[in-house]
Amino acid sequence: MSTPEERLGELGLALPPLRRPAGRYRGWTMAGDTLHLAGQGADGHVGRLGADLGVAEGYAAARGCALNLLAQARDALGSLDRVAQVLVLRGYVTCTEDFTDQPGVVDGASDLLAEVFGARGEHARTAIGVRALPRGFAVELDAMVRVR
Image 1 (cartoon, helix red, strand yellow):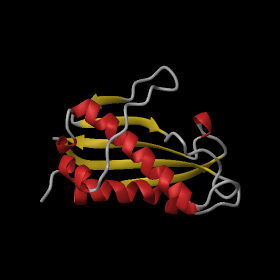
Image 2 (spheres, one colour):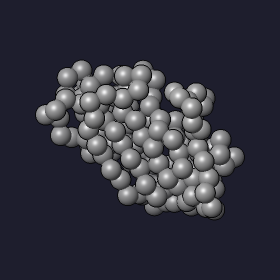
Image 3 (tube, one colour):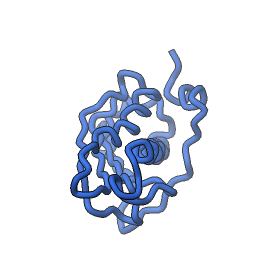
């Protein structure tokens, strides 16, 4: 079976450069064997689900956010092969009051994590609708990962 680093290549995916924090915080912190990944949006994916964007566009935005999370994880660990388990993924979706398919949007990230890590990418998750996110992002994700 392929390693997570090999899977990225097999999937034709490249991790983006690290994003600069939008405020005074770090992109990641470690506590014991747990890596905490700060919230990540995805450039080029702005707007509100239910008004400007449909679920398919939100799904793509969540995939972009997940790639940014993986870039932070690689920065912290040196290699994604050190990820033992994705523990928790939290997804925030900018949406209208009547939009209720936040889970379908955040599936974009969950599917990507499963594609890269297999069973180690399966995680607990929250998908929340919000009025606005920094820089107008349609989706923002944060995560916790157990490290080998």
